Amino acid sequence: MAQKSPASKTPAAPAPSPHEIRPGQSIELLKALHILTRDGKMNQDSRRKLKQVYHLFQFIEPLLQDLKQDHPDVTLVDHGAGKSYLGFILYDLFFKAQLDQSHIYGIETREELVRSSQELASRLGFKGMSFLNLSVADSITSDQLPPTIDIVTALHACNTATDDAIRFALEKHAKYIVVVPCCQAEVAGVLRKNKGKLLAGNPLTEIWRHPLHTREFGSQVTNVLRCLQLEAHGYQVSVTELVGWEHSMKNELIIAQYKDLPRRRPAERLNEVLRTLGLEEMEARFYTQEPAAAG
Image (cartoon, rainbow, N blue to C red; front, side, top):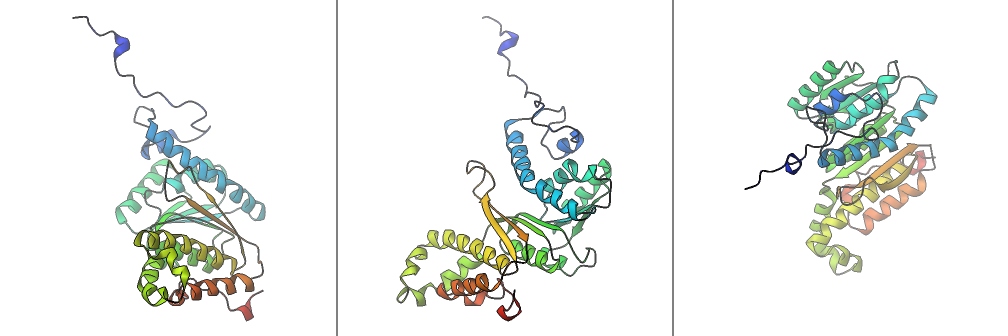
């Protein structure tokens, strides 16, 4: 029986090409985040993960540059940080070169993830990073955070944590808000609860009569209400796709910039949507300024 030639062996994962790893990027960080293997290689899953992070960075980098035009020290809070992939990549690609007092705060409820992120930041010398073991809601009143924040992010913060992140941003007068919502069940639950009494009188209830449609429509309506809420607080809102659908179904990217825009019309529209869909009990969640106090 013929021996296998060396060429027939399973090839090792190729080393990343120069265009995949940006100049000056921390190889130790990429290994710690398991984007690179211990010997510096990259597999297909890692390439996809890195591509997604870079794609999001392309949206956020211009916002950071704009903030730097206003003042040197930029503050960013990342809610539902998890292992802080986003925070670490943002720090590595942008913040560490600033040589000022700019700072990233990662907010996470799982203590072990907060601890491991603190250890990694210390090991890498990322002095402008802090990690707080707080819920998004508790962070709003925590004295561990500054009274104002420049930019707030929430990547796949589940269900109402995204709304808490928006509330945090409003309370902290953030100029920019960047969220990718996830697992939105609250509005769908209210639609389901009130469906019976609305079915006879409102043909629109056919949109969410079936349970699957209730879930999907609830998710869509949640993000529509979030956009109207932000507009009712003076923000300009854009909605786009984060990455291709082949990567993630939780794919909607909402970016808001505070521009002190007129608030009355979006506030009225939001309340009209709540009434039309039988969601009046959600007014406290999607709160707006009173029209009389709006611009």
